[in-house]
Image (cartoon, rainbow, N blue to C red; front, side):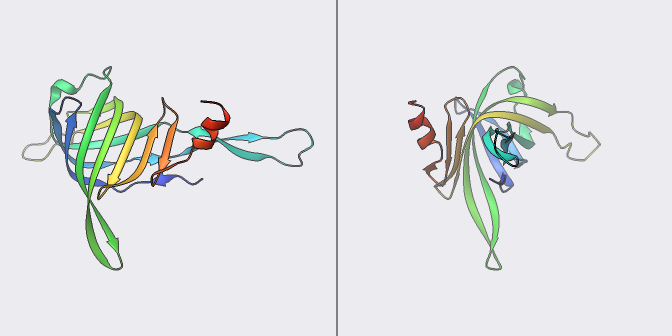
Length: 169
């Protein structure tokens, strides 16, 4: 399976799990879903074969306009809800989509000081490592991944349903 790439979300409000404003994001980017594959070469097989064994770690970069610094504890797990905008070009015309994202994860890196220069925006970036993500475009579910609960859905279809049934989960 090729990696799933996501649009860059712009002009987003970010809330924490208590519905407090976590901050305002100028841009949310860097999200991709990559499969981990393993080479197998059983006895009697002429060549190697790659089989998927899971999903690589999920990360997302958030570039902030405004950030409530009390939330910058790197050891705390955060539940974030994001409302933003994606611009798509389809059939030669631009179309704006409303985006909702639910993320659960921890801060991996932060560049909270940014590149401070007088009278310039400082460009604060925070990278999150995610355990769970759910994304909607215009109210339609695009993807849901929950690493802890073995959930992997794309376009509302549960891709792990058969595996869980076979494993009696």
